[in-house]
Image (cartoon, rainbow, N blue to C red; front, top):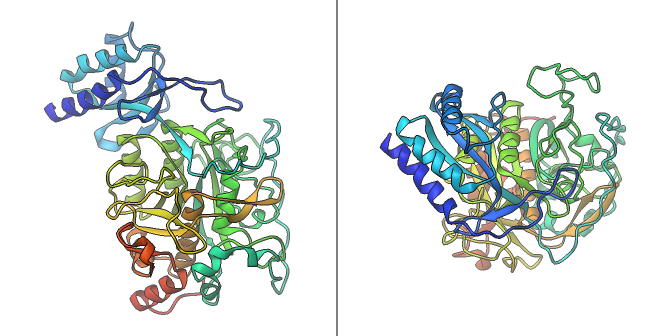
Length: 476
């Protein structure tokens, strides 16, 4: 109980002296919110906190005892069920200081396990170039995706593949001699959503087999109605359409359709991409609450790999718990190192810095195999690098554009993990992570910058996996 009290006090003690600096949040369909900053400079939504209590009854006691101080709370839908240790709920009030006082006064009851601000996260794309303006996501009537078109037989070369230097750097073409991927590998792209009608993505989009589109019924009983291609946690509906371009770009690098004679190819030419939108608006921003719900959805609905090209908030026990649950199910969590050009060993970036066995953190390199000027690094906290400068990929409206960032490096590694998983389906997160790290191409520019000292090479990773697991199986 004393340890519990210390954890609550330490977290809220930092919040209590946070600066009073605000800016507009989440431009788009939701009403703007105010952002404050913790003493350490991490942004969070003012007046919103995630509180972990022993039980729903404990939450009610907290609310009853502090009725004048605390505001609305979602009693029926906890943010995250942490099992025997309690549940996370969001509490909203108008005064940060009153919440701190209320929770600290309740600590002796041992009802409150932990409390933290509702941090804000941003897409990890370099701001040297503005993102393309995506088309409108349209009305709210329901999912508006089209059926996947038939692919040419035999495959037809993708015309712009020669413009993708990253594929050559990581040995993708050699890897494709072994496998192009598999629709059986389900990867969650946790981002700004996806243009799910994009000509080069539509064939590799996940379709929830247990859900009937547009019938207004939760057919699979997972708590989400009509979630056929994923879910939009930001706008709370079944249409995770990309209003920013970032998510469509990362999805294309992971698995734009290969061999369809259109545009480009992802690192994995075939996969099933689950679109989970929690970021959005022109800034590509989103909340801790929605990020955790997206991770939990992916964990509960069959994702084997999660791609996370975002960051910003401070350490979150809520998110740690969610990623830990994914680890328990053997799910690899790939995270962007960050774009501030700083040392993550000295100033942590999250989710990149979580010390969990399934977290694989990625820096960015350029076409000359140099560490990108914007890329965060860390010899103990950043594991490896991948191409992330001027990366050509898909953007909404069946268009293509080049972007830079650790956001662009991360999906290269995600696509590589898909290729490994397609021929070694029993590989779990730790094994995938180990194979990818053990097979990097060592580079002088990365020595002392990332723990492996190297950049992704999927061809070598498949060779490492073959030595450890035997001949690959047929993936499709």
